[in-house]
Length: 231
Image (cartoon, rainbow, N blue to C red; front, side, top):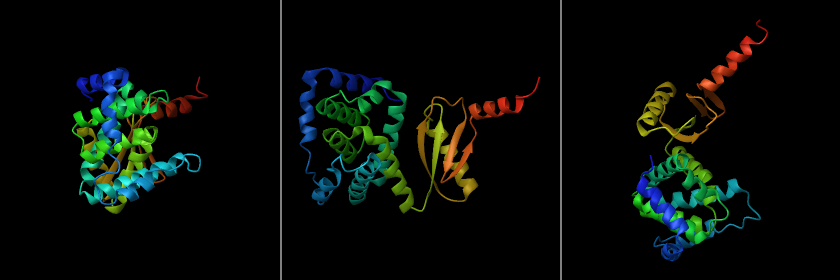
């Protein structure tokens, strides 16, 4: 669960104008220290008029993957992205910060950078979030996370399983789910998680085109259907 101190930091940077001055340091990080920074800049500066959200998210994910690979930080960055997804799912203020069109890019960059720093994210991840905010692409973060993790799994020969739950799953639960799927599939498994509040307990797991639904909501719906015509 996201720590209260992180929430407080996010809210302070978001709402208090004097605290926004630190954002300029984040926005000045481009070009980055990496040798291929020019390639990265070309990849992320995509006109929204000519590209759909999925393609733009894919290009950001590819650029981040290239830099993380060059910095030998793929696992660290992947862990950061997973952690951010959990934070966003558990905290309404952070979710609003990511999706609201009325939050200025400076405020967004400052808040996300401070959040990432306090969460102990890798320097590359921190800078990446700053760049997303500067380019007004933070709303695409879910697609970027999914694309990054999918590329990582593909290159490592892992099977990607999309796991949907009613609430964000704790790390130890995710480990058990991953182990159970790996045992059943006979292969390494990479998890992509999302939250669906309409589920009543249980999980929905999608592997490719195959859906494995173990949610209580689906079981109740099947019971209702089976009871139609009775009485």
